[in-house]
Length: 89
Image (cartoon, rainbow, N blue to C red; front, side, top):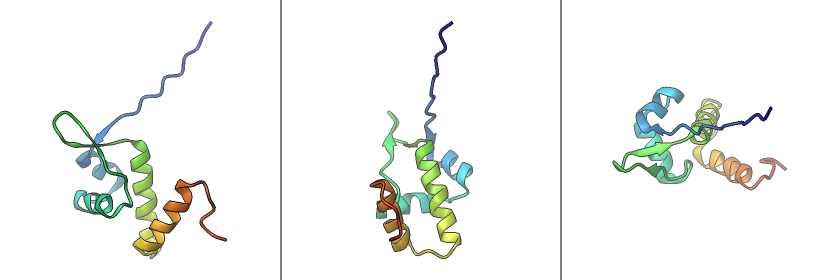
């Protein structure tokens, strides 16, 4: 018997992403503007669409902010993470 694994990548509009992560929509737009969050894809209706990778990244940012990391420090950590490098020497 063959088994198939289907991965469903559910797309979220900004309001649903906000509800899921607890980050206000205005803050999500700001993080996107300053580059902490990749620019959202757009649906046919031009609404921003995010996936679970975006939600995980946003949760990380929220957690780091709760630990008093600055946005600049978070950007450096995320840049290292994006390049599969350790964030600390």
